[in-house]
Image: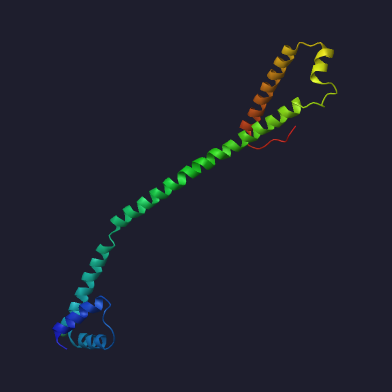
Length: 158
Ligand SMILES: [Zn+2]
């Protein structure tokens, strides 16, 4: 094999195109020819350097950064919503409990007398009573809110 042929095959061998008998021939020539062995190592170094340039970190870095940023954009609205909803749950429960409490307060049957009967018998001023009721509920609501704000756990129903 001539050195010129060996060089061509050497280059092809770096691309992984060389196989079988051709590779054996080249290996045989390389063993016998120091000049081509030198070329082999030179090409090896050259290709190694070229490959390093191929995987230059910068474009991949930006690619990765962009992906990460996109992932964060996708993730963040969800986490914000999750955080918000976690805070919203006790508030919703508080409102629900207040609603149930209000229903229990208004429900007839708790007293034997109907509301109108009670008003007549007690001879109370209905407006004054209503005002007291609303003040009481407002106070209750405030207390409930304080309980919920202090401890985000659901308190036992009264
Ligand atoms: Zn040679």
